[in-house]
Length: 209
Ligand code: GRF
Image (spheres, rainbow, N blue to C red):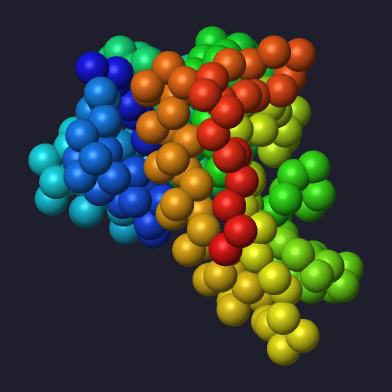
């Protein structure tokens, strides 16, 4: 059984989708802990109710970014993870941290990377007049919102969309592509070569939402 640790900062709907799909589909994996950088992260309640270990490493209690990264790493490694999943985790992690989890650290970002790294992706997609938008699951590198792409979802941008409407449409696809990507990882179905991720059996690594 592969051991998964999930990091969240707030609502945790992607974490919920992962926990549920893992249980329902019987993945060869277990979510062993959910860790938040904010004590008020709502997703912690869901995890605790499911009997999953929870922990808080509060960035505000740490003297520096490096101290936070070290404390977080210590906390995560206490659960001996095979995979660390960033699910709406809103802190930038340092290069040493990222290197420590190289090849076993996944993130989901609400845009079609490499377009729109960073924040406010839905507003930016609307302002740019994009006709398509989406989400990306990728392995994490030390460059923000960058790294080998596991899966992407695409949704239309409608003329009357505001950021909330577009975010909701994208989020619904996140709840499909993130569990799918994590399942492939724990099943050992992903190969990374020259910065490109392929599925060993050639499964489609995209979703049209
Ligand atoms: C998601 O849109 C995720 O892509 C982004 O932050 C949001 C988190 O939502 N990084 P949730 O906490 O998983 O509900």
